[in-house]
Amino acid sequence: MTNAEKVHEFLNNAKTFYFLTTDGDQPKGRPFGFQMMADGKLYFGCGTFKNVFRQLTANPRVEVLAVNGGEFMRYDGKAKVVKDAALLDKVREAMPQIMAMYDQNGWEMGLFYLEDGHAEIRGMMDLKEEFDV
Image (spheres, helix red, strand yellow):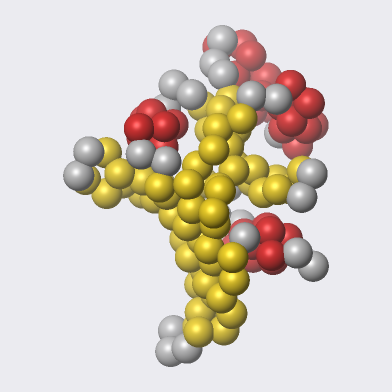
């Protein structure tokens, strides 16, 4: 299993995870649920009209925080936005209802992955695993 697949598996098991950005000097966090593996990379997506997308393009240094049982994972890196029709087709397959709503409203889904990523999985008292992604 690759390190990206380890992060993907942890996020799948956690179901909901928190995506952390900054808005100027103010930290911002919000729950996310969408992520997918494609071509060996872990992709995230959100509407380009959302504040989170504006924030990650203004300052691409971001962190993902997920909790699963008695463990939590921190995964940070630099958001790299991609425009790829084939990837968007995969999102349509994974989330047809949400993408139909986006299409109906003329919204664009922004896809990105984290470059120079680093993850750590911890228990409340100890480090379980640490790796670059």
